[in-house]
Length: 587
Image (cartoon, rainbow, N blue to C red):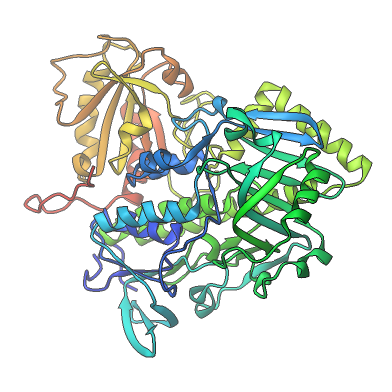
């Protein structure tokens, strides 16, 4: 293995195995950072079925940096609430409008469309997916990875500096690396169908902007609007004896690209009537598949120069729609670190990928299995407990907001991160304010008189150093004094974007401070809410990582610099030769 600080031979690309949303996201993030990357897929071509169809706020936030969030929103259908029923009676509703994000909704969009948007962005970065290229075997030796690839009847060998396995639950990368896939199947079968629905449940504007979940003695049924008018995703528990009624000999595969097998729509309408409690006319099935999900997680996310992400690392119940979202966030977390290491950052940075992302998947597995059990409850006691819990969640404001943060994945954080900088000096922040390992909160700002969002301004860049001036007149002088020391050893201008958030218009700004407009972006916090959210009653600096996570927080004073230095030394490449052309991320 090459020593820390030595730049990898660029002739050996990073190879991403798998061209689903996780693999393509990983490739985009590497390519836009100037890393040579190949994407190989055993599939003959792109997927043509909707499969995963929900994109949460946290995923749209991290994809802002990839440059695709607005494209996805333009093609998808924003869902503004999640209503839960016990037969005909609505017992709870969660309004996504309360989500503190630029994306206060769940975005309904078929996975096939999501993948196309991502592939288009990958092509813009100069990379094409190599379809019909199956990984047969991989071996690691002499600081490289040797892959045996098969195209039709022809086999050939290839080399990679690193391999990222995004090749699904039956991952060849995982098996070739000898990594166990721990867990078990869930005993319940489910049916998922995309079809036209005409029902009181789906009528009107409300029916097109809301997800509905119905509990009944026969099992749970979820109804999700899809972007095409009149088209809905129906997901319902399926009795074991009903599985053979579906003419699909690959049904135990759990939802591949198999089109719409034969199904008795009249029987499905009767099932709808019993479980939803309202009539419906079902027609034009686009995709129908029974599935029995597994709940499994890889014993390790890394073996030498091989990483796992997405379904190759974890599979679980689709309840909550967090599978694809978790995988995309895996990819973003891993790739900024891998790109930094390829530029010369310490290789130990890569150890934080599993340390941060595996606990997230463990939580998702636990919560999704618990929710699946809760949704399948039939005993009077269990149903009463479920109703009480849901009423508490939706009617108690702090509990509701916490639940929404979990559902939309805004609450994902890394309390066990091994990056330096977690210990904060006593009194450096209020206990409720976000610190290292937490998502950097978003909020409204004004940029040169135009409304904007803080995270949207950070999106085109790598790391960002955000300095809150708290309305203090001495802020700019203090920041100007600290920046030279912060820059030492790193290319701050090209690697870290500096943003100054003003508490009051005109206050704190000092034209004589020496801060150059080329060095910083100035924004106004017009209501002061962003300062309040960050607990910035006095000047404070926050380092935001490329994945939107706070890497360090400290006072605008020399006392905070040792911890900042520890974080930047652990996660940024060293300064390049002054004559070298600086690498900048495309905007």
